Image 1 (tube, rainbow, N blue to C red):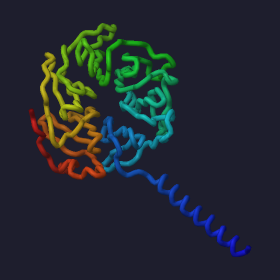
Image 2: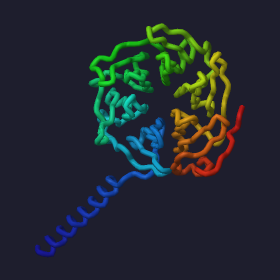
Image 3: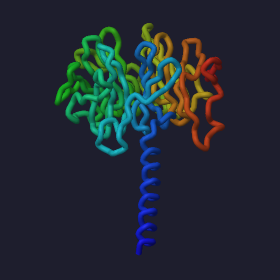
Length: 307
C-alpha cells in the first residue's frame, strides 16, 4: 500500500511539473509578430496591431516589444484588433471588432472603452485637431464621429458601402476608402456631411488603408495587387510600388515624410520613402515560408518594382 501511495504521489508531482512548464510556456512573453495588420507612428515610436497575438507591439530604437497583450478569449478587449490611431493628445487609439469598441490607452498602458460597444467592425480611425474621433464601421457601412472623451451613441456622418480606410485633411474633410462602393472607391466627406466621389470606378483590387500627404496626394495599400497606389490631387491613380519585396500590404500610416506599411503575411513592417525606396522597419520569421521573408535588412535600401 505504501509503495502504491508513493507511486501516486510521484505521478501527481510529475503531472504538476508538466503543467507548470506548460503554464510557463503559455505565459512567456511573445517575441515575434504573428499577423501585424495595422501600424501607427508617434514620434520615434511605432505601434503595430497584431490580430493573432492578439494585441499591440511597440517598436522603439529598432527593438520590438509587446505593448499590450490581449486575451485569446473572444469578447475581451482587443481580442480582434483591427486598426490604430494617435489622438490629438498623443494617446494611442485602437479599434476592436470582438468587443465592438474603440479604446484609448491611459497612462498606465490600459485600454479604456469609448463607446460602450457601439461600433460594429472598426476598420479605421481618424482624429481631427480638436480631438473629434471618426471611425469607419464595416459592419453597418457607416462613418461615425464622437467627441474626444467618447460617446455611448456616436453620431452618423455618412453612409458609405464597405468603408475600410479613413484619413482627414487640414480643412476637416474626410477621405474614405471603400472596397466596393458603386459611388467610387475614394469618397470625400465634407464637414457638413456632403459626400462626393473623388475616384469614380474601381481601380483598386482589394484596398485596405489610405493616407493623405501634405501636398494633397493620397496613398492606398492594395492587398490583392501586392502594391501601394498613389492618387494625385486630380484623382488619377497609379501604382507607386508593386511586387517584391511587398507581399500583401494592409496597414498604412505616416511616419514623418515616409510611409510605414504593415504586410501581415510576411510579418513585416516596411518603411517607404517618396523616392520609392523600401526598407524593413521590423520583421519576424514566417514558419514554413522562409523563402518569402524579405531579403531587405534594416540598414539596406532596395527599390521595389514600379509598375
